[in-house]
Image 1: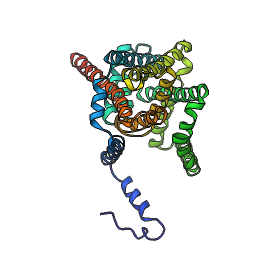
Image 2: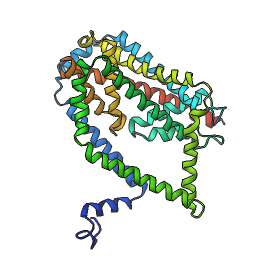
Image 3: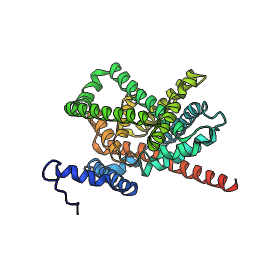
Image 4: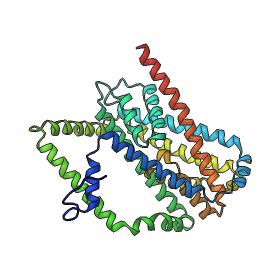
Length: 350
């Protein structure tokens, strides 16, 4: 039962009372609620994605899969992980020049493994593995934020490029299925975003103003200061051209992954590299939806793209999404388990 409040029927609406009550919960309770809602959202999206599937047609399409292209997909997936490892190491090196490639590789793999179950938690996990006396956790976490900014820029560049190359084919789908749904609620969303930014700015100003007078403010200010130092490591990278090459390599591998799965399925064998570029950009938008490992969100959005643009049946679209998503999930689970045991054995010996 919710606690009674004489304010609930007057000044403060009942829903706000409930929200404030939830805020009194400890972190474990909040996490349970957050991840339960996340899995429920995933379940809803999976239902809508798979409810119209003809499983006989799905299985027949699976049997016709060209597994040579699937093998190339796995090679491209590993290539993307290698480029990610090299790029993150380049960001961490200014903080700790003794940071080894294998350490970053294992941290990324364990983080990816964690993200399969608890979306977003992998970023904290991998920072914990890489953090050292020289590179504190908050500084390493700052490098992760810098990585995310580069990834957002890459997705934007992909979308702009493919729309500029072939607007006549992709423009209508983009406007109808992506832009218009976002724009329809842009007014309220804009005010929400502006209010959020203002609240964060005010909180930071108060924290830094009272950091010398309040112990808690001092700790929070120290954390954000370290975060800023990690975020600024990009300026200290010696070879920024090589860093840009790593970023291009990551996203080129992602596009190749989509291209190879398209070629693996007879229904999409006539697809071009430009098609793979657009589907890759659209598929990455699913990462915005907070569900475990992108389950459901990716399947629905990609299947919608393939059925709308290529006239493919929903079964073929779901088969493509399932192959590309689940093969990658299996790969990162295998690599994550290997890295976890390697780190555990190494620490046990130490």
